[in-house]
Image (tube, rainbow over all chains, first blue to last red):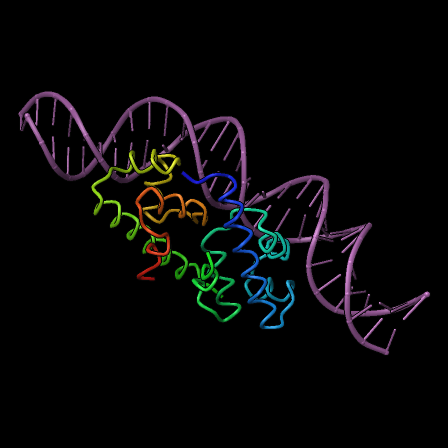
Length: 76
Length: 76
DNA sequence: TTTAATTAACCCAAATTTGGGTTAAGGTTT
DNA sequence: AAACCTTAACCCAAATTTGGGTTAATTAAA
């Protein structure tokens, strides 16, 4: 099974990685949200690891950042 | 952007891959659900690509099937 | 064929995600 | 200092996921 603490670890690491890639591209949360066609709320909360993001949202973010979404899992 | 049709393709391919790996291990939807601590509903609907599964659910399924969850994205 | 096992397809309610808005807080620039 | 940009942190409502249940349909086994 997956403990709550392991779950939190995954979500925060995932968030850090999204932030890292976003900052590498020098784009704001707001612009990333707009490009990916998701809400600005979601970008901020995702980067802080605050909820269980869906796979489709990650694919959208990957496209907007011009990276394969698997990049988000690179250091998991 | 990600069209509805691209989104559906991703979800159905993902579902097929989960089913494929589940059948390789000879485990029923019910037993996989129990092992992964998710509902039987979710396994069936996920395999049919009927909704946007969360990343945590995929990690749980990976652990239950004893494969890295990235395996689910192998043919995407 | 009959029975059993598995999966699909529903219903409903609860929990969570998601979006849209505002305001506060933190930096940076001028 | 002020003005500005960016992010955090809320609120609320809508949409979706998730779980728990039942029943039908499909498939496999006896």
